[in-house]
Length: 369
Image (cartoon, rainbow, N blue to C red):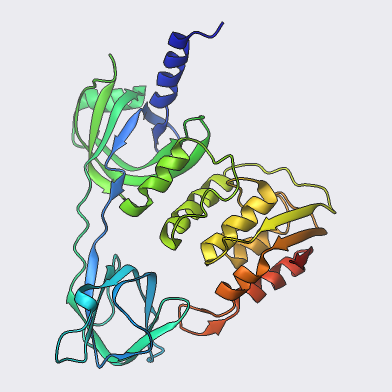
């Protein structure tokens, strides 16, 4: 008989192996641990002034998950601001400037860029300006203190800690492999840094808390934390668990679906299979790919995260064998939201039609309902 004590021991063992610190070159483990502190971090934000602002839509407060500034000068590519907002309603009294702030984690465009710049959010043109300049640079993201708590060190890490030299304590590039509560691989994060300190852990004897002086190469943004916590508990067991999320969190959900899906072996269904696609919540691009993934591979399923990846999945090994049929229910929702999209360069395109064409080219006969 399975006792409550046995269940708790099993649960504790499961928790201790959620995170595995490895060297990506040789795949050897430094150790496994129960908890990681510093996995999530706030990214730097930049603030820009757009002079000679000519609005095409009301820009105020939160502007969008992704906003592009597109210079007419074609030698400069579109500049992306994520999680953008226009503070204080964006307009300074008595001026024609707009203030725009957002996630700005790359080198910025030329300071004081002169020449017309169009601004859009992927769906509509928000306006244009005659020039823009960075008012406040992106704050350098503070390197999160990365602490691996309850770490069971492998022999190679024990040896490094025993030596204690600067060279021995430099882990170089490493990877943090992450599993869900069911023990299934979910994702991994690259990290770099040196061992700063270690101490006995409150998680148990012979376990340590290991502190690294460094940061993840790409910290998980705070807005994605609820999505990660949901997935760490295990994959969803119902369709559309993402439907109530905004575009940014849907994108975070899709990232985990993609990383988990590309680590799994899919069993292709035989040719002639009929799929059902619930289109009620396809109001943005992440929702489109999440719904397609679930139509083919069930709750939390992956079937491409962009049009090019969708075309790859249609070739096989991701659950589909051509020819097949797809019954797309509530297709009018996707048509209404995706038929008038904008590329990063601001060029109009019909994402809905593009996806239908990709499905047809991949041997999927689509019926729109």
